[in-house]
Image 1 (tube, rainbow, N blue to C red):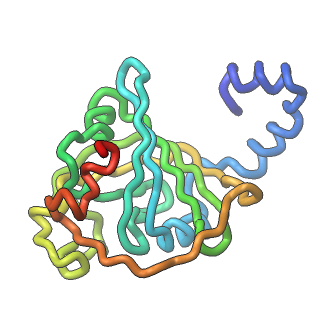
Image 2 (image 1 turned 60 degrees about the horizontal axis):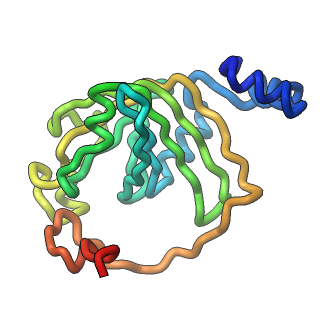
Length: 192
């Protein structure tokens, strides 16, 4: 298990035995029940994609608990909400379906979960079974809020240890889903 390049560096730095133990005890080819429950509690995830030439993009996705839906032990799905209209992640997925998701529980356990797999774009009406319409929770019509769904076939899932992860504290924030107001979006933040 592990890429040849990983093994080369492990040999170079003397970590092969430790890495082998990690591969054997931590890396799964599916989502265990505890991983599924962990994902259902998360309100954000970091999505990593790359185009056909390897140019990368890493973007967060936010929402309430369960921003990423567990379809089954081998499948996840998340909505691509209305945003800046660039579609960097979706564009990459068209060229290269490999995707990495990183969930980190900053509020409680400070544990993280890596999930790598193959992504597929689906239309807004293809929401997973059991996922309610978004408007009731967001106050915006589903047609305006969800641009597409992304389904992920899980190839591997493993822990991100908590030893260096900071613990954050939840504070109330009024979120305006679907807004185009540049002030509320902080559009000019880096153009001061």
